[in-house]
Figure 1 (spheres, helix red, strand yellow):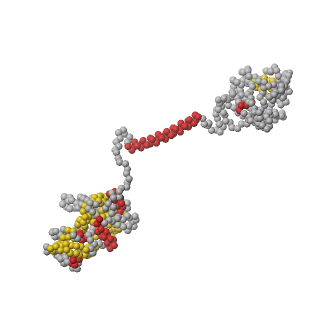
Figure 2 (spheres, rainbow, N blue to C red):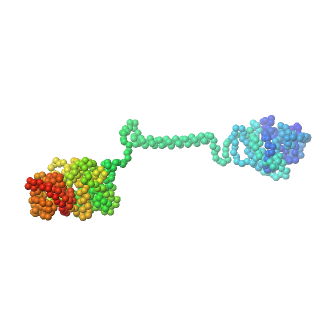
Length: 576
């Protein structure tokens, strides 16, 4: 319907349901209409503009307009005689679009190419939409009437060039115009969801809480898995039953031992000890030896290598497990010593030789060997006695294989297979070569049984072994010190008696020999050597072989019931 006063056009609200308020007041569509002819709509909130608001060169709204007549009436409408209201001077510089009042229109604004989005209503999250030019809302952005649904935006026809001049901007050209959110505020706008045009989800408190809970669940799963693994391993090792018996046990200790302990001695000596496997045409055997030097010389007993003969085979096995073939360098049955040699073997560790003269009864000793082919066996004991005269061998029947030893006695267990092995002092130095044992009768009377140790073992003193080994390496033979007499081995009295003739029927005292030069005669009974009492011919031989050729001996003898002392220098003979 039309107003009764003035040239205004009053339109009904867009919803059609509200009869009060909500009118739209539009500017004249023709630039020539400076006053009047304005449409009245619901009042729009206007924001106070700053006194010196900057002006912006906003583009002119060139949307097509409907032609109007001189009185602001659309074509086809009946002309109504409407007097023009008098113009009232506005002291607040309100543009002359009508009389100021409660329904006065807001100042004209620029229309940019892209309309800015409406500001959010109270209590809503701002909507991020990127960069938007400032300006008033377009027709499709106008808010709906209060209490009415929002109509669909009309299709905007393409812009048509207009010859009408663009409305003059109310802002000075020197002041840029900045659109404020309050110019486009719409309290009735629907609440928009918090979105981002970048495509990434907004980090809301609920999403952050969900991530924290997920991270906590993963951490809890890892901890539970680790605990479960430890518990499972423990149950697997100790059993998962209810009543599990776990016995107390000592904790692990350092592997090192004191150097003078049995373990410390064995650790240092074992790398120098070897096991010999000997095989010949008629028999074979096992024995022990030890390394003398880095050239491959190994010392052992004569009766160990004797089964090989001249065409047998000797194999040497080292502590590391490596094996090598060996050949005999020299051997002597009288001393029961032999030297074999291995070639092309590197990394040999020679055994340190001690001094048997320094040994005292009761000193601790360690024996190493291969009893009954159990290589690397370590036993320990003490020195039970010194200068114990023993004879060994004699199985050949001729007596040529008998050995005479002024031995060290020990209670360290020595068994068949220990022969040739070292007897060590507390500093892992060789003081003797294990050679013989005294065993109890097995009761069979056959004498063929091989008994074990009963704590009576005998070793060749290292001082004697050293001299013999040097001679065997250097010359292949060992020399024997001799007195130059033939002894009566059937004499049962106390002492060693000189025989009446030699084994070949000659004189018992060798002409020109050491005994002849000292004044010995057939039938003399020798009772002491260097002040030590002897009781048999074997003991005299043992005491003699404990010296070197050229050594001087002091003898005490009985002749025709009288005691006499003589001195002689030992001669030499080649051993067999």
